Length: 64
Image (cartoon, rainbow, N blue to C red; front, side, top):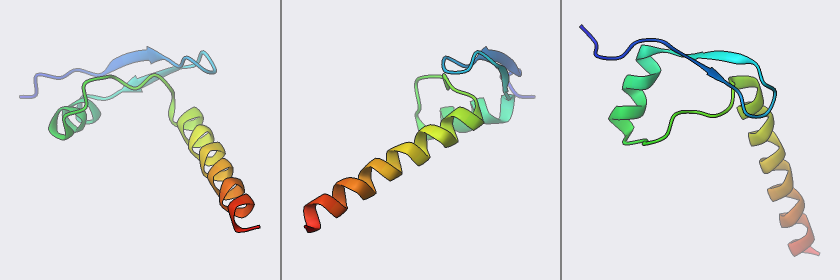
């Protein structure tokens, strides 16, 4: 039996509660991640897309 239990966390960006599942916690532990997620999946995806867009814009500026 897993030592992990589903945990409810509130997203720091949108304030929505999301579940950090026992399986996700186990995965984080296996990967050596020390911190729990602070953002829900939607906000993580949005933040990642914004970061990728900024990187692409920076690359275009460097090419000119």
